[in-house]
Amino acid sequence: MARPLRIEYPGAYYHVINRGNNQEKIFKNKAREVAIYIARDMTGITCKDLGEYFGGVSGALITMMHNRIADESKKNKRLKGRINNIRNQILTIS
Image 1 (tube, rainbow, N blue to C red):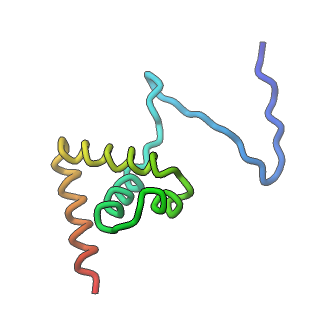
Image 2 (image 1 turned 180 degrees about the horizontal axis):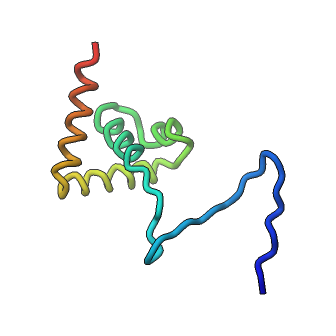
């Protein structure tokens, strides 16, 4: 039996799920996660406040993204170098 057609209208919100092989995410926004990682490390802003700034996500999600990048940067020297480069660029802004 086929799935019923979606009701569409202007301004509607739709829940779309895209998964790859083994239910892996297809779209990952590493740049956003790195921005969250750097913002959390370089500022005294709470995870809750960072979550509001980054689109109204929870503080727990901010913590999870931060920890994910922290773990990955320990294993991936190229990522760690890029993060350090971004930090240095931020610190030298005048």
